[in-house]
Image (cartoon, one colour):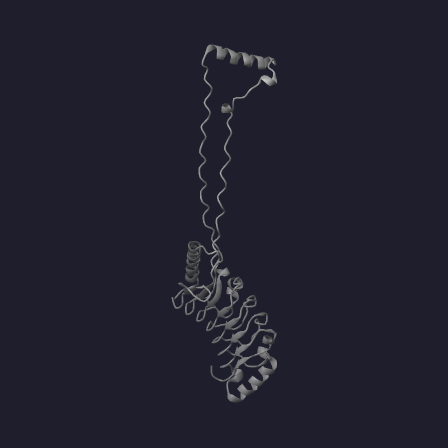
Amino acid sequence: MAATDADDAYVMDLSERHLSSRGLHDALARLQRVLHDEDERDGVTIARPLELLCAGNDVAKFALPASEKPPRPEPAPRQRQPEPEPPTVESYAELHRSQGGLMDMMMGWQDDDDETVDEEDVYEEPPPPPPPPPPKLAVPLASRIVVLDLAGNRLGPDATPSSKALSSLKKLRTLNLADNGLETCSGLASLVNLEALFLQKNYLRSADGLWGLSKLSSLDLRDNDIRSVAALRPLSCNAALRSLDVRGNPLCDDAAKARDARARLRSVLVRLARLGVGPHA
């Protein structure tokens, strides 16, 4: 694991480790603790972002570990204050005076003005020590991940089983789900801050489920099963979309189809700056 110089982000490469869903979850739990310890050691007040690379594993469901709370430190034991020693009677006369004073008090004969209190005999309990500061929560990975590469896993036929974890990635900007056996784009609509999405080498037939990604600027749909321009019309709602690649799909699997698809896509997606259309990816 290393921190990049550009934005001081951590890069964790767990690619091609033969990790199962459970194995990846356990590895991420350990990673979360390590990152928390490093941030505390370096005195970092804002959690560093994380680029998480998990391509080429055997993950069927992507899940994140729960945030952990460090154990609360034990409070310091209170020291028992010594009890004040009783006054000593130095003489019979002093004892008589003390007994007489007690008798006067019982009979109501002692005036209030004559009542004196020895300051040394008054015991004041010291204030309790301040409570220890609350333990600092470990920053969850969901608040760190800005790049997530899950290409070449087994998340298909759709990402719905992993949608709970994916929807928690509020800072995610780049997501790679290439070659996962996906048949639909379900489970991705909550990634509202996503800017780049890679879905090549799946079995997608349309772009349904992506229209709500308002910040999506780059979309890779190469080598899927998209057969018509109508299947891509939902992308007209993606106002930020500037780059689209649909090469290797049936709608453009020969030169004539490619020319027609290019012209029709340009008329539908008028904001595109880059459009990849053709029989080969």
